[in-house]
Length: 299
Image: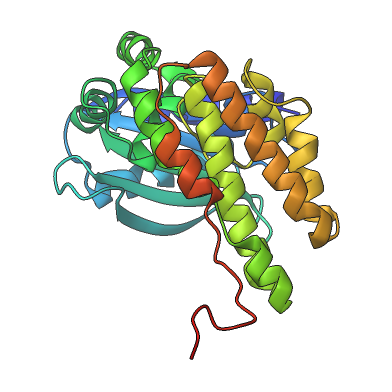
């Protein structure tokens, strides 16, 4: 199912590669990782030596029609601030649809970032232990791209992103392990299932993030959990099926099942990083709001 999508990306890439100020072009996402399905769109990243203009981006996308020999519906030329930094936090994005409009066409998402911004993100994470989620996801992604143009510079980034400092793993574990502790029992007692599952989902996110740190894998989005679990050599048994079961089973069973899974994660961290002081993280995880049926003092 990947083949025609990759071929499509290879037809589009020369449009951007012909722009002298573009250093590299890459195919990202599930298609690049061999995980696409019938719902997968195309994610293409362009890396510029300078800030691109909207006119340049628009002119490039207008060439899709002649290259692909099909009408193209273009939507949105947006600027995003991925993290607070007016120079390096910016990236740009636009979307084209082929074979139909934005409701029926096949989506092609093109995003742009400067070479300097990409290098800044790498330095922030690898050298300065920055735990920003967008930056972690960027390092995960760059290691799993299909290179369409500019192999030398992307390969340098990939070699840098292959480094995962132990100190960063420790920092992220101390951040995510205590965040697995949530007052599920309170919301279950109140019958607040919406809040119960919202907090359970948040706790699962922190559990998976902790395991990724333990395995020295930069955290991507968690859309493809089964595949991500397969990348982790260190994990509780049957991780992805057990997490999926938490969302399907009765809440009265989901709560103890989650706590059991979290307990196993703590045990794995203690086994593989015994020098890490987890006392504060365990205390935070174990703390729950105390129920009171009677007054705690004599009134």
